[in-house]
Length: 377
Ligand SMILES: [Zn+2]
Image (cartoon, rainbow, N blue to C red; front, side):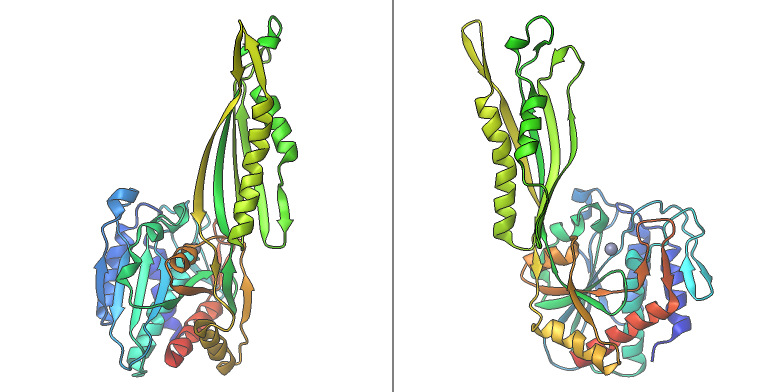
């Protein structure tokens, strides 16, 4: 059913178009041509300038040849670096880069699979529901394209993102994440001459860190302080420390709870830290910058979109493993906007390294599962 030569050519052409985050314009131009050739109507939003990209998010619509719930397919057109002058090499059934860049299978394996699926639908006159395809920019920079996207443009209420490693895996759950920057302000003083006039921000940070819940909190919740910066010299009581960290959980309440515990660990210590200088009481203080990096995704296992892929896999003799992921992706954002979206594995491997690879057999598998899924939608 899948034309192996055609999908290999498609993937190789895409991989050879450099599309690092913020510089996706060449890839967008190429994909516009391909989707239009296949009968799609292509539009772009206008968020690129705001994000700092030379492209915009791409939306493609294919009218249905039968009635039914529209299906949304999501991929991203940017890649991580190094991605200058990518030269895909196909040897013994495996794509790699020439060795000095990523391959870009993340996420071009998914894009190539979609294009091959569209070729097959057309070639074999397979009836299908209306299809919407979104190709985002700057996914690798913190889901910037998806976050800026106006999801009211989609008619589909459910969909599939093609963007995870392995094969025959469906991700239906992923945690929400909070990003934290905590600045602790003490009071500077000479450490040898008048330390009693200073408040050590480093000591407040140390006590707070010892009280914070960090690491694995429970099976669905984690927290981490990843960087700590502060202090100027050994003879100065340090007046400033900056902590950067994150908390993740599949459960929004637990996420809020663990985030609050981290923040209150700093507040409690800071409140007690005071000195009286020349009759004036001086206290430590803190500043908190809390950002929701992405909302959780949780598509129930009995949701129609999960069932659809499961049945397609069974029909092909390839049972699908339904599982949770620990990271965040565009699918979190779509779920946050009320679109039930799961993630399908694309066969991409060792992503985000120059050793990235993609086996042709896995690429063909992804396209085959996608065709079968669309046929049954
Ligand atoms: Zn990706």
